[in-house]
Length: 282
Image (cartoon, rainbow, N blue to C red):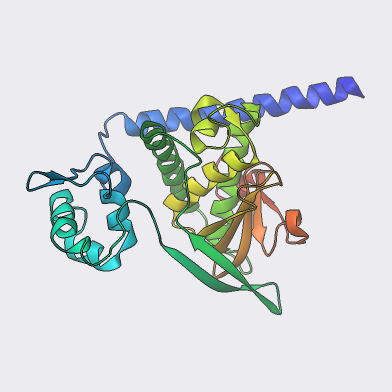
């Protein structure tokens, strides 16, 4: 029995290494000629100036936060770092606008099952304590993974009862699970709660896997809530997919409609293997 478990463990590890290696190679060849992902506000505003007219507002101002917090600012100035700091210095700070942290929160009511609804809190998610450099690296990984998932999804023709978004979630969950299987589970140290820990340091926990998966979902354009954040309980992503409630679980590598089994749900779980066949990825 122990020998059988050992063999299964070795096979699982080998498959995970193959998946991670394959994605790493794909991302390398597609990113070596790209200096910056110009569409990503985080990349553009990461080192944006905090100085206007000789005054440094760095103690109270972050260009990315200011840009993300206010739709009217985004519409008026886009990602122009000089226009953003000028507006904050001349108007924003006097209007009481918050520019040193992300504040946006949204409650979305979505169908759950056949005869009920759920409220999902869509917050601007914290990064688990990553440094700016670590977040930049983790975002790069997540962005490239999301790009490959979108390319694979383009091969799929939606069928009745199953939309594309839930399959993208399952694909992303499978990739995160592969990274975790290639790493070490821990609840100590500096990286285990972060996407950087999963993608780079190879240290993970349920919390870190959820953040890594959530970061990919951000780049897929899928809204999500971090379930059980800040606890020692199992964590996963509550998601809004194809117009209804769903779940995505990076530790178990599955996604689906309805509620996760981790909170008593009985929704059908879709795995990475299922999606590979649907997306014709071999």
